[in-house]
Image (cartoon, rainbow, N blue to C red):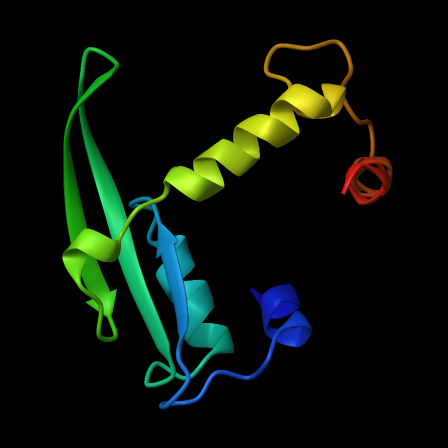
Length: 112
């Protein structure tokens, strides 16, 4: 979140930044640590699963002024899939793993 804060424009109450995520509460803590809660919108998409299959979705507004129908993670999920398909180090169950974080960061920089 610190990297996002440093790369983008500073959000204000009039020009809020909007974030969506899954039900991982670490995002809320990181957002509050790096941004003013009056200057951001944050919503979660919680997937309910049975036997490994998604059977329902619940959209929650954590803070800010959002409409529940706006909350969706489909774009970031597609981006993550594209990254996994294009970078061998991100493929699940692979032999092409990175032994150090610097090499993974370099590979990501080259790909992007």
